[in-house]
Amino acid sequence: MKYQAFLAHNLDKLPQSKLLTAAQLQEIKIVSAVLPFKTNNYVADQLIDWNNTENDPMFRLTFPQRGMLEPLHYDLLATTMKRGASLDVMKNMVNSIRFQLNPHPAGQLEHNMPFFEGERLEGIQHKYPQTVLVFPAQGQTCHAYCTFCFRWPQFVGINELKFAMREAQQLVNYVRAHKEVTDVLFTGGDPMIMRTEILSRYFDALLNAGIEHLQTIRIGTKALAFWPYRFTADDDADELLRLFERVVERGINLSVMAHFSHTVELSTDEVKKAIKRIRATGAQIRTQSPILRGINDKPEIWAAMWREQVNQNCIPYYMFIPRDTGARQYFAVPLVKAWEVFRGAYQNVSGICRTVRGPSMSCDPGKVQLLGVSQIENKKVMVLRLLQGRNPDWVGRPFFARYDDQAEWFDELQPASSADSLFFNQLKKVSPQYSLS
Image (cartoon, rainbow, N blue to C red; front, side, top):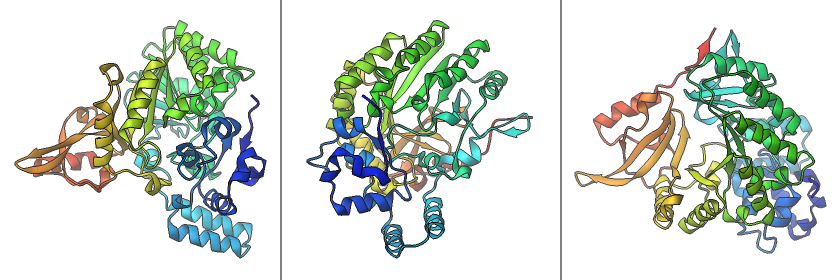
């Protein structure tokens, strides 16, 4: 199938657009002025139920909805557009709104970008000792955009909000200098938007550098869900799989971190074929998604998704809480409810599916997991721990927060006792860690 992207300005070319009302088209135009919108013919033709767009999870996952902007912002944009404001006026207004949406949550900009040899590395994040994130400049877009995406600032054309790396050798030098690094994670955007020829420059640079402490290369991607042809029918798909084989043959673990948010994304013949082809290279596929209101906030959806992933030889990995950025208020699920969904799903799958962890928040101190709700001296508390942390000493230590069934993010929680208050205060002391001159 030939790749065809659809943006807000050319929705008239989408075959199903006749099923979108004038009101829907106007809402897409207004919301996508702030939050990026892009879809493609695979998503439109095979994943969306066009007879029920109001309730369809994949439509909501890829097409902007009015509620994704605060009412004040939406009304302001709608009024300004109606008045025929100039491009400069619109641009200033849109960017002002964007900067109010917490474009870089969890200290990505302030704390995660390291300094190396006197230079700030704008295409690398190093939050946890073992793992370096890489943002190849050529991979800073996607086949289609998730409306919940916490990396939406990568796609809106504001350079000061964007992470991007252009030099593979800079990455090699940084990893070689940091002996604690075992994993390099290519992310974006989506690295699978890149041509294999370009991706191989980064991979081969790492493979040929002989870095003994490098054990794993990971690829964060939504391509299996939104464009599985990348692994089956694109003109360099076979070349891509040979690159995967080359990584595995060199003794490096290759893990494809696949984003699946709903069972429908796992249902097509093409995605099943793509998964088999990737697995045949020796690569692993681990699966993850945030829990999203109106898309997958029911235990039966997650249980079915984990079962199907295991049936296709994928490894369920994470249930995340959507980060506090962008359209978060539209998708957010209270933490207690997220845990109830996770627990309900976990109870209804076999042990082989229980590799999954969650619900987890990637916040300033690290990945904070809500283990559950318990009672201490007849008082309800929320039990948490860090699965990953800026400070390794924090990892795996249980701690407690006051029960709050409305809280949607870690920052909204309060310590349950004076002892927990001390630990909460430690978690709030976040500073850049990685700097070599």
